[in-house]
Length: 115
Length: 115
Image (cartoon, rainbow over the protein chains, first blue to last red):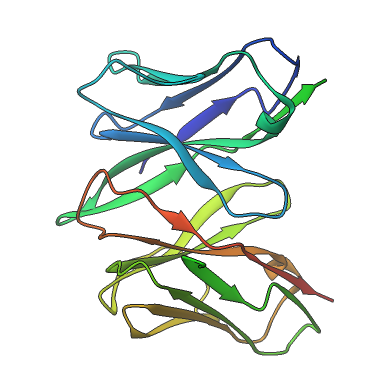
């Protein structure tokens, strides 16, 4: 099955700095890589995603890069703000049989943005 | 206007009891999921239903029995609760499981504590 490794497990930055979270995946058949943000006491929420035929995608202060050859993808947050503080999960989606797909999540990164 | 709702939000019970968690989505999605998030925030899929049909059944003890009366509802019944069942359980939905790029929408979670 798919295995997704995520680093670091915790990340503390000063407001205004950039934050980078990295993930690797094991199954080369995975073709979709979403990132979810989980605020305290809430469910995860999709913030950005990237498909396997794209190398980079940007949405305002967040961007994601994908290196299919190396099987790794990263989340970049620029100009961090205190409200960016949360747990971030990377995930990889692969076919789980027939035409069904399954998400495998990384173990999460607790990002703390200090004012 | 809640998209994915779960009840109850908190559930405290004794070992050996049987309990249920209910989930409803009003997004018109075909696919619903149950995830378990342990104390280390690790998010792992348990079950997936597509249009009331079980699609994904991870290696979950058979004390856990999902039931989908219709495609907008997916309930989770747990028999003979054990200490290790303590976790936050998230319900999620997506347009369908047969699309590789479908966003999953998560509910607010149910924190289950087994004493």
